[in-house]
Each structure stands twice: as structure tokens, then as C-alpha cells.
Amino acid sequence: MQLNARPGEGGSVAINSEAEVIMPEQSEAVAATVDQAATATETQIAKANERAASFLFGAQKLLFEECIFAGNELLDRAQTEMHLLSELVSKLAGAHSVKDVRTMYQDCSKHQLDFIRRDCDRVFKHGERVIDAASNLFKSHPLN
Image (cartoon, rainbow, N blue to C red):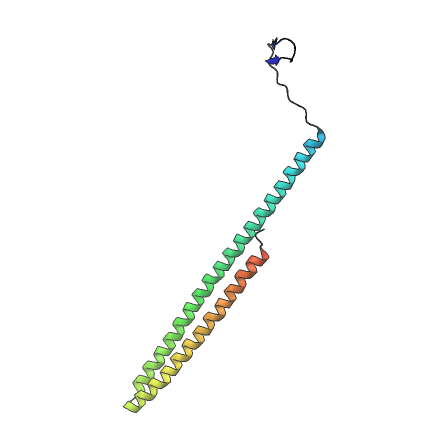
């Protein structure tokens, strides 16, 4: 249905009983501009999605590597602790006097302190490695 009314004709209104839709025609330049804007937006969204997926994959990889490293470190620490304990027990079994026990205690204390020092050095080096890996992750996957 179409409503035809022209200003200044005394206010008469003509109603056409046919159902028709009147669409304003767009110029080809406007349509091309809209298509270019849509394509540019789609490209930006695709690039953003790719960067986000790449960043998440890198973060997942870093987390997985850290889990593996932590497991290996726990295993290594347990083996070293067992070695130190067996060394203590064997020296304790071989000590026959108070002087021998004191010497054994000093030796085992030095070994334990060396182990703690090496363990702390490993933890600090690992912390530096994690910080470097995380900063490289953010450098290689900028958020903007």
C-alpha cells in the first residue's frame, strides 16, 4: 500500500491499494564504500583473532613447559635428598665416637648447605628464564 500526499494540494491523500515497497536507490559509490569498510573491518577482526589465538597458544605452551620443568625439578630434588640421607645414614653407622659424630655432622651440614645454595641458584635462574619467556611472549604478540 502506498500513501501519496503532496504538500500544498489542499491536504488530499490518495491511497493506492497495491502492496508495493519503495526502496531508495543507493549510488554505486556509497555501496562500494560500505563494502570496503566491511572488508576492512573483517580483516581487522581476523587479524585480532589470529593474534589472540597465537598469544593463547604461546601462553599455553609456556605453562606446559613450566609444569614439565617443575616435575623434573621435584624429581631431581627428591633424588638429591635421598642421596644426602643415605650419605648421612652411612656416616652415622660408621661413627664410633663423639669426635666422629661431630666430624660427620660438620661434613653433612656442609653438603646440605651446598645443596640449598645450588637449589636457590637454580630457582633464581629459573625465575629469570620465566620472566624472559613471558616478556618475549608479550613482545611477539602485541595486544594492539
